[in-house]
Length: 309
Length: 294
View 1: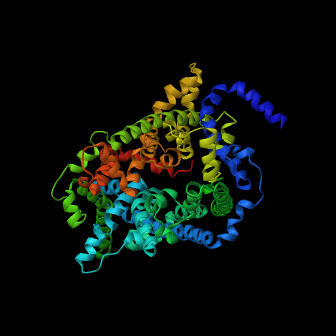
View 2: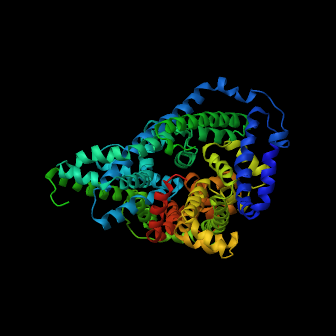
View 3: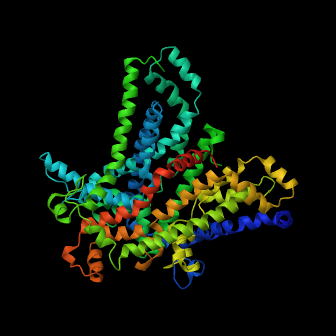
């Protein structure tokens, strides 16, 4: 300990300019990341606004009592988080890889460039804007989808009232917004494959499909697996911006769309229940932490250079 | 390259068709909101939304941009937050990234890990909210829309790897010529990583422009609502239009409600769409670099 202190003291003098440069940024991480991390103890306290996080009295596990009272809705929220994320990860990855593999076959450079920059455009708008797009298509009275349905002789669907349809709707919107952008990562990985492999394969008369299957996919499998594992490591975190942006406070849809993050948000903002929301948040953080670490161990075993830490 | 078999031609042809369809799917929603924002409200009420504009009308835009407009005010908030926020972020990120890229500094490793760790674990919403509002007093003020996003760990680590790509020999040579650390940063490192700086700058600007999370959590004063929050309240709260009508002289019944939603949306994504053709190459580049481990 004393040696560390002495090292830092001499280093402070020696590299004072570097400390000075790093200081404002470091202060940011302390205030907005590490201070809240110590604040997780609020999950074990009876929070009082006047006493703050550190002054409020401890109340043991009282804040976790809702788990036994409201088990059904907690389980539902956990299920939704895992189920929706699994859909996003699975379908999103397959389509992003497919897109990258197909784009790779396009030789017309100008076509490739223009289409690529157009398909990543949706990534740069917010989920709030996407919710307006969705409204344009799904709105019961004047939405485009119902217009088409009626044109084909079907009766209109009340989309904002049909919870069962929303996992599908969310997947479509997720794919629409992210696949183009994510495919670029895989395309960069494909660019790293040795072109000689393709040349010798076509000399041997291998068809395009066979080349994709036996050269391209194996060539990027490392990237695919690592990104998959990282996504699985974060599977307990719902995308708040997406779910709240699209569903908002429409409680008719909660049964299939409410995820841990929106649940915690409501507990805090609508019910004003600091105890319950912080307890849920803490459980999510701990499980997420354990998951990230185990996944990282798995990645490390698979390929040491790709491990996160 | 020359002798494609029929099957191969089919595959390549499919690739072109696939991308064309993908492009159409990607841009149709943009078309629908632009069309609806330009369509006469009566037509929308009678016939619903469509992919193409009908009965052209600028009423929605006139209403949205009219006197005492909520949207113009929100535009001001968003522009200020984006410009000032990006500036703060770029200064802090560049300074810290430069320090962390110095190989001779033994604290660079441990501090980089502290930064990295925040990407894996956080205290969750509640402690963050209490710390930000109660201890840092960031509530209902412009700074609350910027400071919580001042440094993005991911952008910082990308920036650090940008600076690390600069050949150390250049720094050594400059040091021998008598340059101090500040000159190394400003005169040598920054000009060499200019394309990288542009990419990070765009990432920051986009995230400030698109943000509504901070507006949702830390702002209740409607005069401080950024654009995205205004859209949220318009779409989730129909009474908004009526309350806005009280300020202007238009009767509530005459408000082009659907048009207003769409016109506001068009105005919000307008700058992104207009600048996109000129900036998209930086996005693609930054993303490929970002996939390289920090």
